Image 1 (cartoon, rainbow, N blue to C red):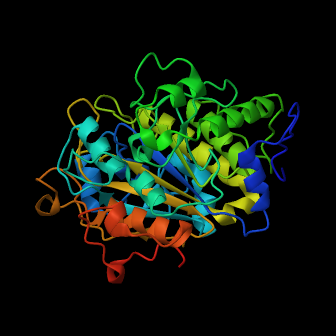
Image 2 (spheres, rainbow, N blue to C red):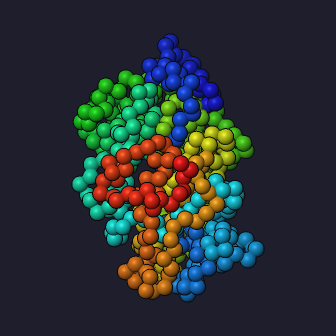
Image 3 (cartoon, one colour):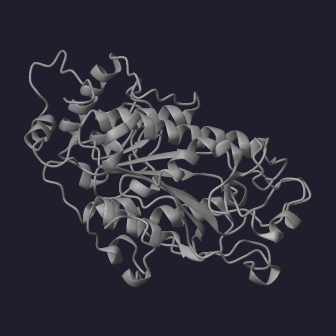
Amino acid sequence: MKGGGVAMLGFNAMPSFLTRALQAAVAPSPKVLVVIFQRGAMDGLNAVVPYGERNYYGMRPSIAIPAPNGGKGAALDLDGFFGLHPSLEPLLPLFQEKQLAIVHAAGSPDNSRSHFDAQDYMESGTPGVKSTEDGWLNRYLQKQPEENATPFRAVSMGPQMPRTLRGSVPALAIPDIRQFQVLAPVAVSGAMSNGFEALYAQTVDQALHGTGQETFEAVEMLKKVREQLYIPENGAAYPNGKFGKALQQVAQLIKADIGVEVAFVDIGGWDHHVNEGGVQGQLGNVLREFGGSLAAFHKDLGAKMADVTVVTMSEFGRTAAENGNRGTDHGHANCMFAFGGDVRGGRVYGRWPGLDRAHLYEGRDLAVTTDFRAVLGEVVTHHLGPADLSYVFPGFPSNPNQALGLIRA
């Protein structure tokens, strides 16, 4: 298989899903969407700093990031008003090269401050509605049937199937392609300990039946991938944390040309109620892993990034003011990052509501001015392909005339 160094070592016959993939190889390069969830509620006000907002410094006397001043311990200027946290320095060239875009004051209109509920609402794409059975990304795939789909069409790098990908379209949850222990989704009964065979033998989700043999063939292929040393291209160096390793494996799967259309990765460690830190500290550490991993992914894929878009999200933001423990509590609006070949980068999108007390949500939080579904709707529609957004995000009044223009149509 071109580009990925995937050898068919040890196979007597080519798996049927690979046969279909090769038959479709003459088609244009498929588009890929990578969705990243920052679990725990990132502090968007310290990640993308509104240093031009006078109230920011008054509300955060011990954890605010200094305005850009040319020094290493200050925000990295983006547009004269916003700046990146210094730990996100690897992302600055992407912004300057108009590859990276940011949407600030974005989030869910639901006012929940529960991590569990807020994550569920964002992954289901139905804020405030707990009865939704499937995830928004699975619903998108449901409306885009793929004749030559492989078992790798939708993959999640993690031990459990994320809410985002649950639904009638089959998806794989892969903790680590080097271990090949692919676990069953929550719907599977029993011990869930035998990987692929158990997944398709025991599942109560009838939509998955009939694909077990091909998926078993897929794990056999992954065993061969494991035996080969993967070397990131273009001098990319991924951080050693779980997130960096997960993104490296997503890059490996994409470059293997085995039919990946959507991939999901999450990164935790954002819930900093105590001693969050400013330039240095807990937030700075996780931002360093986050930014370094994204930059390495972009460099590793090289020219392939023209067909890949990455979008990030977190369940909610943090309070505008720091608390008495030099941390921040659960808030409302946050910021989202997007980069890739179809992204109109070099801009901070969204209407800034301000941090005056009168403009804060419930008197304490940055207000949401851009619904996260508007961002995701533009990404899937203009990057992956036309979508029935009323099905993907039921109940959301999508208005094309109010589009951000984030993605090249």
